[in-house]
Every structure is written in structure tokens, then in C-alpha cells.
Length: 83
Image (tube, rainbow, N blue to C red; front, side):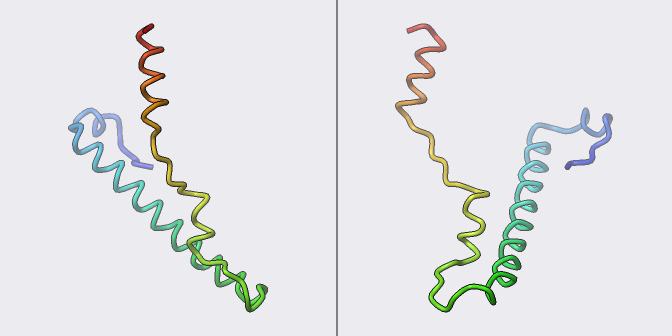
């Protein structure tokens, strides 16, 4: 949450707004990383010795690596322009 007042929002430049949003998203991710770490250590005593679970495994569903498909983007662009 950026907690901007309306007059503060109007005075922002695009670059300032984007920097605030990126900072918010980074803080949110850092918080999620910490929560995944502590969740792992809460689960660890109940897991077997041969477990391969890591904090990264807990965090992975929150931030999947989604790479755009160029063919899908091209098809969507052609559809948008009726080609």
C-alpha cells in the first residue's frame, strides 16, 4: 500500500510513482521470503530426515517464473489489429 493522499498522488512524476511501486513490491517479496523461511523451520521438526523441502520450495508458488511466449504475444497482437 502506498498510502498517498490525493494531492500527493497528483504531484508525483511517473518515475517517482514507479519507484514507489517497485519498492513496495520488493518489500512484499522480502516479507514473503522471511515468512517462507520461518514456515520451513516450523515444519522441519515434523519432516523426515530424507526430506528435500527448502524455503525456496515454499516460496516458489508465490512467485512463479512466468516468461512471455513470443508466439502467443504475436498472435494476440495480430488478433487485436484484425490481421
